Length: 605
Image (tube, rainbow, N blue to C red; front, side, top):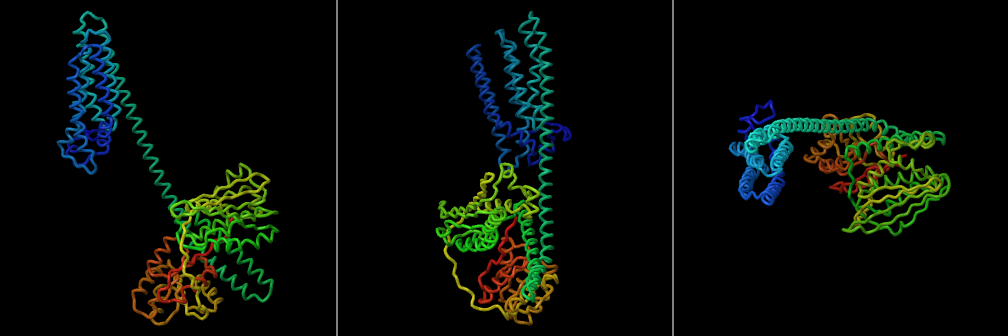
């Protein structure tokens, strides 16, 4: 609380005390004195009891009563200034600022009769009492220099008076003169200790501020990195979309086997680029804490079966057996994030097959009740590969670490798959662990939490999509050409628009069955265009709108859904996922249920 120093001295001036709000130093000191009160009350009671028992000072309880009353007054005043949202009046703040002077004056007064006493060691006890009081003052009032000076002033006064009292009580004692030296030395020592404590507190505050500044810088760096990765991701998806779409079209139209092989090579390279891009984007989201998992019903058995079916040809190509245990005992319908589950399983199966040259890869599946309607799904992927050493296990979940240069040369990959898989497992309420010994293979154990769910209505679409009138909107010419190539392979000749404004013009004059809308475009974006379409009264007001976006996160999809979009697919366009989205929205163009048509992540190295 405050004294009467100027602002530059670290104290509290008149204007400060007339202010309605406490400064941080005042508040910390008030709280410290309040919290220290039980110790002071206990010390006072023990001193009084000791003096009455050993010296017979019966009047000591009058001193205790005065000190307790002063402490009660201080506690009442402090409560009025430390209450949440308190704006104490000036008189209360002045009183709080002066109570350290009052309590110290009462407590330290006991030293004078002790110095005047003829009892042996009584003056020593008086000196100890003042020394302890001074140390307590500089510790609990360290946040405010004025409070330290006010609380210490009575004790310093008593130390300077003590030699006079001692000499008057013991005029023939030569040691009475030595009290001057002891008192001055004690005052100097306490002053030095106070300055050292203040310097330590300032250093701590500076270190705390520096740590906070570095934390902000780190957060800004992570945000800048995430923004950079997102921007690069968006830019790279455009050429990758064109590569994949062009390769698929070349493969379909190639007249000979050699041309189809070349087209397949281009498509595989584009798929690898897409996988790497997805991994980098996932890692950036995980670092920034922006990754989220969904909770929607899906067929667990079908999800696992589809994932395993994808890897059987790869296993057979290497002469490996791909064995599955426990799949028939899994529940069918559960609620969770099927896409992320596929992503993790794909990574585990990819690595197991990649690093196993002979033998088998075994997948064991178990689902156990975990309480509150939740199920704990455990998937163990064990291989008969070379196994891992203790050093390998320590590096296994390090980003971009490929264990060795020979691994990079033989198998490629980014070294992100397992890192991302473990973080995704933890987001899904579980974990990913590994056990292995050299020469005895590796065993990866995935655990996630899912919830029991009711089966979804299974109403397969009955309308073919070929010949449908599709409006494809994208501001980038390469993306429009890629969409056109994919749609032409479905038997659809789309109408193309280069902006949301142009799309609204076409929608006002022509009838379409569905619209593919790029979400992020200069000028009016896809969500705003969809809102205007839904708010209008044109012939296409209720047609299905499929969002086409490079940022297919749950948050982005919710924003698309809120704008009135019915489904979404991610860039680079996966023909199978686009076909599925069109098939599901076209049969019911009047308010069809929203469809999640995100692409199934491919395995990462």
